[in-house]
Amino acid sequence: MEFFVDTASITEIRTAQSWGILDGVTTNPTHVAREGRDHKELIQEICAICPGPVSVETTVADAEGMIGEGETFATWAPNVVVKVPVTPEGIRALRALRAKDIRCNVTLVFSLPQALIAAKAGAAYVSPFVGRLDDNGADGIQLVRDICAAYRHYGFETRVLAASLRHPVHVVHAALAGAHVATMPFKVMEQLFNHPLTAIGLEKFLADARALQAALETRRAPV
Image (cartoon, rainbow, N blue to C red; front, side):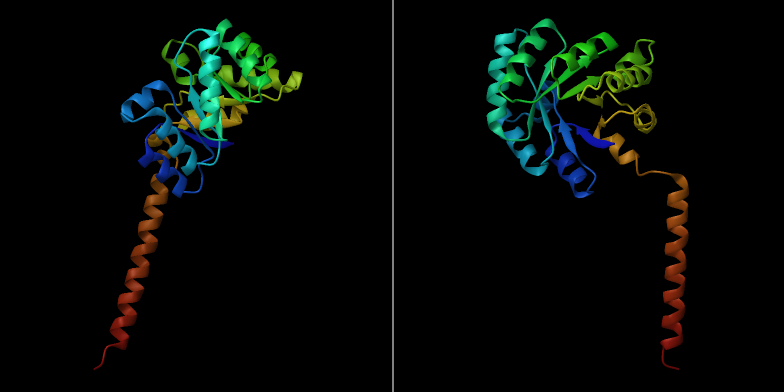
């Protein structure tokens, strides 16, 4: 499974990249607005830090506008993936962008029919929103499982990018469901490292190492 971080924070992206586990980045207009920087300069800096796919979301509702934005975004860096919504206009834009060899991530997916549409239209990625479905009384991970099964059955090459992951358990379940990618907030990626037994074991090992060093220094001390 690939790990993407869902943010536009340069600090968070640099830190995740330094761990050696970052495969890509997903951004959206909300993330970008939070940074208060020029959109192009921010995305280009992100793309320079992370050589993997960087999703950049369109900000208009009509197909022609999305096509224009997508063509522009694709000139910013070779690893840009244009993010479009799973609407009739978004799918029209996807088809036009694919014809120009521009990869697209179809976002705001909440049903299997939407995921099938995205795959049939040639999406590079499809983003089912797990947490938002859970918030509305549905089973987000079950949707990821269903999409993966359907894609395997029909041989679609679209990669399933589990999005709106709220905690490490979401990441675990997305992996078991067969998602190709998990995109998560930076704090969730941090939490993947955590386990109380790891902390307890590390402290015990370090304490033993300190005790041994102290004992050796005592033996070496002149009488």
